[in-house]
Image (cartoon, rainbow, N blue to C red):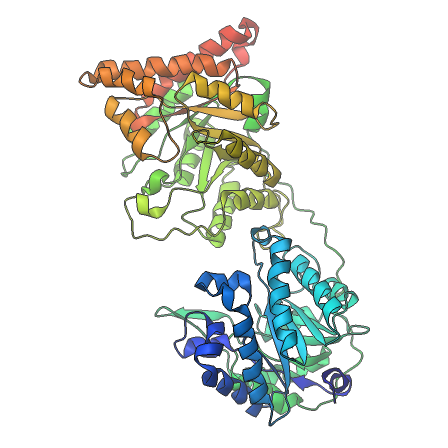
Length: 622
């Protein structure tokens, strides 16, 4: 009898986790490669699930696609690994006549834009053909957080085969996918695309998965499946483990039947004992055909509570209307903040629009810019612009940090990738980089819609104004501008550039960016000495100083006071040139020498007044 014919009349028991068992045995590399190097081990796990009562097993091919295998240098072994996996599963299933499903896992997670649809199609087709050629009894598409990805590959698979297809989504919040599509609606869409079985797997244990199933109707033409996790994972002594016991699974089995599930197995953390529990209660039992759906949510339109009133107009609006000066004053490396606040006060007197605070620039540990930004705002009444680097926080930390900034009323942020940890004072520290600056910009804009990075309703919209970084000191300015255009597509409101040290470069930047709608703050940094100039030019990423400028500083190598004044003079001439082309000036304070940038801010204000006319003098930089 075929797989689908059996599902018409009885509940079938599927297997549980493969990776969990392998991981518990000390396997912590490419688990799919073990199909080649440890085939007997893989077969014994299949056999254990069949002995526990599984009617259906899945091949050890969850990540056996080009995109995932290339992480291990195994991208050329897709066919070999998938073919071996099917052969192993068939050997295990032969005596007990269990069905073998060819498993294909999702690639996209919380960052759907990290992999294009075309890349997914190419990778999926290769793995699909390998599994079909080996004669699997059906396909299991599992652990898909991104509905677009699953719909895309399901459409391809349905055109290529008449074999049964199980399509399962994973969700962050019971009842909803990360893009806020209700799971019930998502499963109907999958059924409409030809899936024979639709359901849920991974992420949630029995409790929350049952809550989600209460919102799901029994499909009209497809069957319903569920593969819950054993529990939430724990992390002890450097290893992940799950603590959900088999009795808990056995006790929840009948509740899954009552929700209309016909194919039931396990995902992360489950073992043959968990499956034995399901089998003891449900094997060969008759499925239900009707149920009462407790909640049938439609597509949710988020209507968050009113956000706090913004205290300042967004910088991108200010700089479009009039000249604007912002100044970077780095948080100190030591705990004494006296000089920092002295500098902040001097810059306030200079009339700047915002004080910007770097996020551990050059991967060097400093006082949190969030805490200093809040104090600058509360004690001095200044607008802080908080830099956010992708280096130090994973997605959890980034969202928490941004929610904290919103709560403190710090609405102006600069999204940057961040210098790698190895360049700083803790070279052994990890560089996280869960997301790039592009994705961070996009995620911040999602918070502005009242949705978390995972798609959950935040109950309130944020009101972030998002700046993005611009490095004009590159060989190809055309390519750099293409990056700006891409950042605008992702949601950047305006740009802040790395420091520029020549009038020729300013003109070049203007000619290449004048078509952009997003304004640019041009970075300018006073040099303090010849050594300072040489260090910046030769050792700091993203900074290049014209030979003529370095020569001017070199002449005063042994005269520190005159060298500093020369640095001021150079920057003033650059301010003159920049204000003829741009409205935004971004001054970078070297070594907390705020007197330099305060003087330059005064000068920029005066020059802007002269250039634009005395009639705007009173409104320039307050």
